[in-house]
Amino acid sequence: MRRAPLKLPAGVVIALDVGGTSVKSGLVDASPAVVGPVRQTPVDSGASAEELLALFHRVVAGHVAELEGRALRGVGAAFPNPFDYGRGVSLMRHKYAALYGADVGAAMRAALPDPAPPIAFRNDAEAAVVGEARFGAGTPFRRVIGVTLGTGLGACFVADGRAVRAGPEATVGGELWDQPFQGAQADDWFSIRGLQARLGADDIRAAAGRAAGGDAAMRAGFASFGDDLGRFLAPYVAQFRAEALLVLGGLAGAGAHFLPALGAALPVPALPGERGAHAALLGAAADL
Image (cartoon, rainbow, N blue to C red; front, top):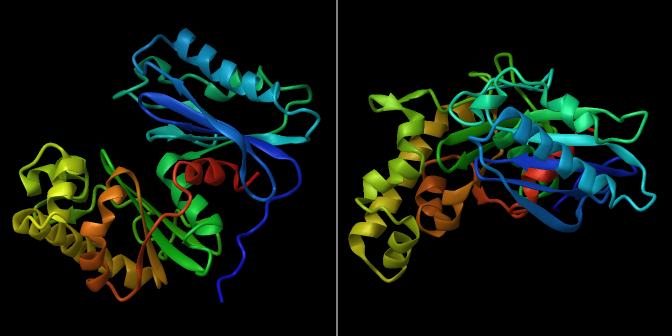
């Protein structure tokens, strides 16, 4: 029998999922659920540090104004790597370059009521996987590995609802993007650009439509993507003793065309996410 999703403590958390072009945000309650609509605030990742910090301040302040008497437990923010998650300091240079070395937490803290509740930062892929593992498709399982397939390959190893980042169980500290596969990094194979190269198509959605319509070449391309991903992940699944693999991210929308081959290459089920855009917000709030 499917176990119930884990609950969170009473009160609400302001949760942020920071991407390259927008910041998704919302209030997460103890259910757990996102209360009200998810805000999507456009952001220019090439803006100045002052502009970016002011934007994060405004996002948090906007949700503080929505509390309506509810107790605020804290702020949970999911950011891409590289980032010093313990200190709330950005170390990115490829985007948000102006924020390098900036204390993002301080800008958010200035928008909070006094005394300010805690602010917790975590990796964006980890947040999405933890959200699904604890509150979505992974709830029947104690041990899961989750991957996010998008502009790159994100991954997270989860045991009993907690990310395993170090030690022999995680094998590679929970990160898989830089692991070797067929003469390249896994990130080069299992990402949007990797699938585009494999299919010989720039538009993944159009390619999925052709596969659904019976195009044999597209079907074979998607199936080979799933098979290769399964063969890459199988050793990690075995070593971690994972009971399921969660598949999230932008490419998961085409999962119908590669998940069967992926599942066939693994000793455990390969499952799409259930929480969608809410997964990362739930994961960002999970440990507060």
